[in-house]
Amino acid sequence: MPKPVYIFASGRLARRENTIVLETEERKRHLPVEQVSELYLFGEVDLNKRFLEFCAQNGVLLHFFNRYGYYVGSFYPREHLLSGFLTLRQAEHYLDPKKRLALARTFVLGALGNLRRLLYKEEVESPAGLQALETIESALVEAEGAEAIPTLMAAEGRAREAYYSAWEELLGEGWGLEERTRRPPKDPINALLSFANSLLYTAILAQIYQTHLDPRIGYLHETNHRRHSLNLDVAEVFKPVLADRLIFRLVRRGQVKRGHFLREGEGVFLSEAGRRLVVQEWENTLQATYRHPRLKRSVSYRTTLRLELYKLEKHLIGEEAYQPYRLR
Image 1 (cartoon, rainbow, N blue to C red):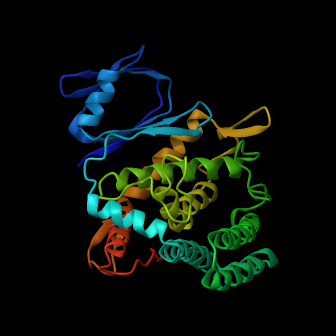
Image 2: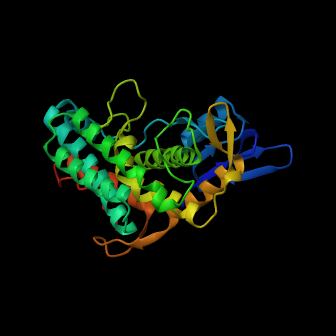
Protein backbone atom coordinates (compact mmCIF):
# COMPACT_ATOMS: atom_id res chain seq x y z
CA MET A 1 0.00 0.00 0.00
CA PRO A 2 1.40 3.46 -0.86
CA LYS A 3 2.58 5.48 2.12
CA PRO A 4 3.58 9.10 2.84
CA VAL A 5 7.28 9.92 2.60
CA TYR A 6 8.76 12.75 4.67
CA ILE A 7 11.81 14.50 3.23
CA PHE A 8 13.92 16.72 5.45
CA ALA A 9 17.09 16.73 3.36
CA SER A 10 17.81 19.35 0.72
CA GLY A 11 18.52 18.31 -2.83
CA ARG A 12 16.86 17.60 -6.14
CA LEU A 13 13.78 15.51 -6.90
CA ALA A 14 13.71 13.81 -10.28
CA ARG A 15 12.13 10.97 -12.18
CA ARG A 16 14.12 7.91 -13.22
CA GLU A 17 11.82 5.62 -15.21
CA ASN A 18 9.18 4.57 -12.64
CA THR A 19 11.10 5.80 -9.61
CA ILE A 20 11.26 9.02 -7.61
CA VAL A 21 14.89 9.92 -6.94
CA LEU A 22 16.07 12.34 -4.28
CA GLU A 23 19.62 13.47 -5.03
CA THR A 24 21.54 15.06 -2.15
CA GLU A 25 25.23 15.78 -1.67
CA GLU A 26 25.62 12.58 0.32
CA ARG A 27 23.58 10.03 -1.62
CA LYS A 28 20.71 9.17 -3.94
CA ARG A 29 17.51 7.81 -2.50
CA HIS A 30 15.25 5.78 -4.78
CA LEU A 31 11.51 5.55 -4.11
CA PRO A 32 9.35 3.33 -6.34
CA VAL A 33 6.41 5.58 -7.22
CA GLU A 34 3.81 2.88 -6.56
CA GLN A 35 4.92 2.87 -2.91
CA VAL A 36 4.42 6.62 -2.42
CA SER A 37 1.08 8.31 -1.70
CA GLU A 38 2.41 11.75 -0.68
CA LEU A 39 5.67 13.63 -0.34
CA TYR A 40 6.09 15.96 2.64
CA LEU A 41 8.85 18.40 1.72
CA PHE A 42 10.58 20.12 4.62
CA GLY A 43 14.02 20.54 3.04
CA GLU A 44 15.01 22.84 0.20
CA VAL A 45 14.32 20.78 -2.92
CA ASP A 46 14.50 21.52 -6.62
CA LEU A 47 12.08 19.91 -9.06
CA ASN A 48 10.76 20.56 -12.56
CA LYS A 49 7.54 20.27 -14.56
CA ARG A 50 8.43 16.80 -15.78
CA PHE A 51 8.61 15.60 -12.18
CA LEU A 52 5.24 17.19 -11.35
CA GLU A 53 3.68 15.54 -14.40
CA PHE A 54 5.05 12.21 -13.19
CA CYS A 55 3.51 12.77 -9.74
CA ALA A 56 0.18 13.81 -11.28
CA GLN A 57 0.06 10.70 -13.47
CA ASN A 58 0.56 8.52 -10.40
CA GLY A 59 -1.66 10.44 -7.99
CA VAL A 60 1.18 11.52 -5.69
CA LEU A 61 0.45 14.63 -3.63
CA LEU A 62 3.23 17.05 -2.61
CA HIS A 63 2.98 19.07 0.60
CA PHE A 64 5.39 21.98 1.04
CA PHE A 65 6.61 23.41 4.35
CA ASN A 66 8.94 26.36 4.84
CA ARG A 67 12.08 26.38 6.96
CA TYR A 68 10.04 27.13 10.09
CA GLY A 69 7.77 24.14 9.54
CA TYR A 70 4.87 26.29 8.34
CA TYR A 71 2.60 24.54 5.87
CA VAL A 72 2.91 26.48 2.60
CA GLY A 73 0.63 24.55 0.26
CA SER A 74 0.10 21.37 -1.70
CA PHE A 75 0.48 20.18 -5.25
CA TYR A 76 -2.88 18.50 -5.66
CA PRO A 77 -3.02 16.51 -8.92
CA ARG A 78 -6.09 16.82 -11.08
CA GLU A 79 -8.94 15.19 -9.20
CA HIS A 80 -9.11 11.68 -10.60
CA LEU A 81 -12.18 10.34 -8.74
CA LEU A 82 -14.44 13.39 -8.85
CA SER A 83 -18.09 12.61 -9.50
CA GLY A 84 -20.20 15.26 -11.21
CA PHE A 85 -23.24 14.07 -9.29
CA LEU A 86 -21.53 14.32 -5.89
CA THR A 87 -19.94 17.68 -6.73
CA LEU A 88 -23.41 19.05 -7.49
CA ARG A 89 -24.69 17.69 -4.18
CA GLN A 90 -21.75 19.26 -2.36
CA ALA A 91 -22.49 22.61 -3.97
CA GLU A 92 -26.20 22.25 -3.25
CA HIS A 93 -25.50 21.70 0.46
CA TYR A 94 -23.26 24.77 0.49
CA LEU A 95 -25.68 27.05 -1.36
CA ASP A 96 -28.70 26.01 0.71
CA PRO A 97 -28.34 27.98 4.00
CA LYS A 98 -30.22 25.38 6.06
CA LYS A 99 -28.26 22.42 4.73
CA ARG A 100 -24.97 24.23 5.13
CA LEU A 101 -25.77 25.29 8.68
CA ALA A 102 -26.80 21.74 9.59
CA LEU A 103 -23.45 20.34 8.42
CA ALA A 104 -21.44 23.14 10.01
CA ARG A 105 -23.27 22.56 13.30
CA THR A 106 -22.47 18.85 13.14
CA PHE A 107 -18.76 19.54 12.72
CA VAL A 108 -18.78 21.91 15.71
CA LEU A 109 -20.79 19.53 17.88
CA GLY A 110 -18.40 16.73 16.95
CA ALA A 111 -15.40 18.88 17.86
CA LEU A 112 -16.87 20.07 21.17
CA GLY A 113 -18.01 16.58 22.08
CA ASN A 114 -14.50 15.23 21.58
CA LEU A 115 -13.01 18.07 23.63
CA ARG A 116 -15.37 17.19 26.47
CA ARG A 117 -14.64 13.46 26.24
CA LEU A 118 -10.90 14.10 26.23
CA LEU A 119 -11.11 16.18 29.41
CA TYR A 120 -13.24 13.51 31.09
CA LYS A 121 -10.69 10.87 30.13
CA GLU A 122 -7.99 13.07 31.64
CA GLU A 123 -10.01 13.34 34.88
CA VAL A 124 -9.37 17.07 35.27
CA GLU A 125 -9.92 18.38 38.80
CA SER A 126 -8.34 21.84 38.79
CA PRO A 127 -10.49 25.00 38.70
CA ALA A 128 -9.30 25.63 35.14
CA GLY A 129 -10.22 22.12 34.05
CA LEU A 130 -13.66 22.23 35.63
CA GLN A 131 -14.25 25.67 34.17
CA ALA A 132 -13.27 24.33 30.75
CA LEU A 133 -15.82 21.52 31.04
CA GLU A 134 -18.50 24.01 32.08
CA THR A 135 -17.67 26.29 29.14
CA ILE A 136 -17.73 23.37 26.70
CA GLU A 137 -21.15 22.28 28.01
CA SER A 138 -22.42 25.83 27.53
CA ALA A 139 -20.95 25.96 24.02
CA LEU A 140 -22.66 22.68 23.11
CA VAL A 141 -26.03 24.15 24.11
CA GLU A 142 -25.31 27.35 22.18
CA ALA A 143 -24.20 25.41 19.09
CA GLU A 144 -27.36 23.29 19.15
CA GLY A 145 -29.49 26.42 18.87
CA ALA A 146 -27.21 28.54 16.67
CA GLU A 147 -28.86 30.02 13.60
CA ALA A 148 -25.71 31.35 11.94
CA ILE A 149 -22.25 29.97 11.24
CA PRO A 150 -20.40 32.89 12.92
CA THR A 151 -22.31 32.02 16.11
CA LEU A 152 -21.15 28.41 15.82
CA MET A 153 -17.54 29.44 15.34
CA ALA A 154 -17.69 31.88 18.25
CA ALA A 155 -19.06 29.18 20.56
CA GLU A 156 -16.32 26.76 19.52
CA GLY A 157 -13.68 29.47 19.92
CA ARG A 158 -14.72 30.20 23.52
CA ALA A 159 -14.74 26.51 24.34
CA ARG A 160 -11.26 25.97 22.92
CA GLU A 161 -9.91 28.97 24.80
CA ALA A 162 -11.19 27.52 28.09
CA TYR A 163 -9.94 24.05 27.11
CA TYR A 164 -6.43 25.35 26.42
CA SER A 165 -6.38 27.07 29.82
CA ALA A 166 -6.41 23.60 31.42
CA TRP A 167 -3.33 22.37 29.56
CA GLU A 168 -0.83 23.38 32.24
CA GLU A 169 -2.61 21.05 34.66
CA LEU A 170 -2.55 18.28 32.07
CA LEU A 171 1.05 18.74 30.90
CA GLY A 172 2.88 20.21 33.84
CA GLU A 173 4.45 23.53 34.71
CA GLY A 174 6.10 25.28 31.81
CA TRP A 175 3.92 23.59 29.19
CA GLY A 176 0.81 25.70 29.59
CA LEU A 177 -1.00 27.60 26.87
CA GLU A 178 -2.06 31.05 28.03
CA GLU A 179 -3.09 32.24 24.58
CA ARG A 180 -3.38 30.56 21.18
CA THR A 181 -0.93 32.28 18.82
CA ARG A 182 -0.24 31.17 15.27
CA ARG A 183 1.76 33.44 13.00
CA PRO A 184 4.17 33.27 14.61
CA PRO A 185 3.62 30.90 17.55
CA LYS A 186 4.94 32.58 20.69
CA ASP A 187 5.84 29.52 22.81
CA PRO A 188 6.69 25.80 22.47
CA ILE A 189 3.13 24.52 22.95
CA ASN A 190 1.81 26.89 20.28
CA ALA A 191 4.59 25.73 17.96
CA LEU A 192 3.66 22.08 18.57
CA LEU A 193 -0.04 22.79 18.04
CA SER A 194 0.50 24.62 14.77
CA PHE A 195 2.74 21.90 13.40
CA ALA A 196 0.51 19.00 14.51
CA ASN A 197 -2.58 20.70 13.08
CA SER A 198 -0.80 21.22 9.75
CA LEU A 199 0.00 17.51 9.61
CA LEU A 200 -3.66 16.74 10.31
CA TYR A 201 -4.91 19.13 7.59
CA THR A 202 -2.67 17.54 4.97
CA ALA A 203 -3.48 13.98 6.07
CA ILE A 204 -7.19 14.67 5.60
CA LEU A 205 -6.55 16.40 2.27
CA ALA A 206 -4.73 13.28 1.07
CA GLN A 207 -7.71 11.12 2.05
CA ILE A 208 -10.16 13.45 0.30
CA TYR A 209 -8.14 12.84 -2.88
CA GLN A 210 -9.07 9.15 -2.59
CA THR A 211 -12.81 9.92 -2.48
CA HIS A 212 -15.35 11.59 -4.77
CA LEU A 213 -15.40 14.75 -2.65
CA ASP A 214 -14.15 18.15 -3.77
CA PRO A 215 -11.82 19.65 -1.12
CA ARG A 216 -12.68 23.20 -2.21
CA ILE A 217 -16.26 23.03 -0.92
CA GLY A 218 -16.45 23.23 2.87
CA TYR A 219 -19.29 24.19 5.18
CA LEU A 220 -18.02 25.49 8.51
CA HIS A 221 -15.06 27.26 6.89
CA GLU A 222 -16.00 29.68 4.15
CA THR A 223 -15.60 28.51 0.56
CA ASN A 224 -14.04 31.57 -1.05
CA HIS A 225 -10.54 32.31 -2.28
CA ARG A 226 -9.06 29.62 -0.01
CA ARG A 227 -7.82 26.69 -2.06
CA HIS A 228 -9.21 24.00 0.26
CA SER A 229 -11.71 24.19 3.10
CA LEU A 230 -13.36 20.77 3.48
CA ASN A 231 -10.24 19.32 5.14
CA LEU A 232 -10.37 22.16 7.69
CA ASP A 233 -13.97 21.24 8.55
CA VAL A 234 -13.20 17.58 9.12
CA ALA A 235 -10.04 18.44 11.06
CA GLU A 236 -12.11 20.17 13.76
CA VAL A 237 -13.51 16.79 14.77
CA PHE A 238 -10.10 15.11 14.88
CA LYS A 239 -7.92 17.77 16.53
CA PRO A 240 -8.63 16.51 20.07
CA VAL A 241 -8.42 12.88 18.94
CA LEU A 242 -5.16 12.97 16.99
CA ALA A 243 -3.26 16.28 17.22
CA ASP A 244 -3.87 17.16 20.89
CA ARG A 245 -3.33 13.64 22.20
CA LEU A 246 -0.11 13.43 20.17
CA ILE A 247 1.18 16.53 21.97
CA PHE A 248 0.14 15.11 25.35
CA ARG A 249 2.16 11.93 24.69
CA LEU A 250 5.23 13.78 23.46
CA VAL A 251 5.35 16.04 26.52
CA ARG A 252 4.45 13.45 29.15
CA ARG A 253 6.96 10.90 27.93
CA GLY A 254 9.67 13.53 27.89
CA GLN A 255 10.27 12.96 24.18
CA VAL A 256 10.00 16.62 23.25
CA LYS A 257 12.42 18.87 25.12
CA ARG A 258 13.23 22.56 25.27
CA GLY A 259 16.17 21.92 22.97
CA HIS A 260 13.75 20.98 20.19
CA PHE A 261 12.64 24.61 19.84
CA LEU A 262 14.28 27.67 18.32
CA ARG A 263 13.45 31.31 18.88
CA GLU A 264 13.66 33.54 15.82
CA GLY A 265 12.41 37.11 16.00
CA GLU A 266 9.10 37.11 17.84
CA GLY A 267 8.34 33.45 17.19
CA VAL A 268 9.19 30.02 18.56
CA PHE A 269 9.59 27.15 16.09
CA LEU A 270 10.43 23.47 16.11
CA SER A 271 14.00 22.66 15.09
CA GLU A 272 14.59 20.07 12.37
CA ALA A 273 15.19 17.44 15.07
CA GLY A 274 11.91 18.48 16.69
CA ARG A 275 10.00 18.21 13.43
CA ARG A 276 11.50 14.79 12.73
CA LEU A 277 10.41 13.62 16.17
CA VAL A 278 6.84 14.90 15.76
CA VAL A 279 6.55 13.46 12.25
CA GLN A 280 7.70 10.01 13.40
CA GLU A 281 5.18 9.98 16.25
CA TRP A 282 2.49 11.31 13.93
CA GLU A 283 3.01 8.43 11.52
CA ASN A 284 2.93 5.99 14.43
CA THR A 285 -0.40 7.54 15.45
CA LEU A 286 -1.97 7.21 12.00
CA GLN A 287 -0.77 3.61 11.68
CA ALA A 288 -2.07 2.60 15.12
CA THR A 289 -5.16 0.39 14.98
CA TYR A 290 -8.24 -0.14 17.13
CA ARG A 291 -11.33 -2.30 16.84
CA HIS A 292 -13.98 -0.37 14.97
CA PRO A 293 -17.32 -0.69 16.82
CA ARG A 294 -19.41 -0.73 13.65
CA LEU A 295 -17.16 -2.65 11.27
CA LYS A 296 -16.14 -5.17 13.97
CA ARG A 297 -12.56 -5.26 12.73
CA SER A 298 -9.29 -3.47 13.32
CA VAL A 299 -8.73 -0.24 11.41
CA SER A 300 -5.98 2.36 11.53
CA TYR A 301 -6.56 6.01 12.29
CA ARG A 302 -5.53 6.85 8.72
CA THR A 303 -8.33 4.57 7.53
CA THR A 304 -10.63 6.24 10.05
CA LEU A 305 -10.11 9.56 8.27
CA ARG A 306 -11.18 7.95 5.01
CA LEU A 307 -14.23 6.37 6.66
CA GLU A 308 -15.22 9.79 7.99
CA LEU A 309 -15.25 11.14 4.45
CA TYR A 310 -17.34 8.20 3.24
CA LYS A 311 -19.90 9.07 5.94
CA LEU A 312 -19.96 12.62 4.61
CA GLU A 313 -20.53 11.33 1.07
CA LYS A 314 -23.52 9.31 2.29
CA HIS A 315 -24.95 12.41 3.94
CA LEU A 316 -24.61 14.48 0.79
CA ILE A 317 -26.43 11.93 -1.39
CA GLY A 318 -29.18 11.52 1.20
CA GLU A 319 -28.34 7.97 2.17
CA GLU A 320 -27.49 8.46 5.86
CA ALA A 321 -27.14 11.51 8.11
CA TYR A 322 -23.54 12.35 8.97
CA GLN A 323 -22.48 11.55 12.52
CA PRO A 324 -18.95 12.72 13.41
CA TYR A 325 -16.31 10.46 14.89
CA ARG A 326 -16.49 10.11 18.67
CA LEU A 327 -13.35 9.80 20.79
CA ARG A 328 -13.33 6.27 22.15
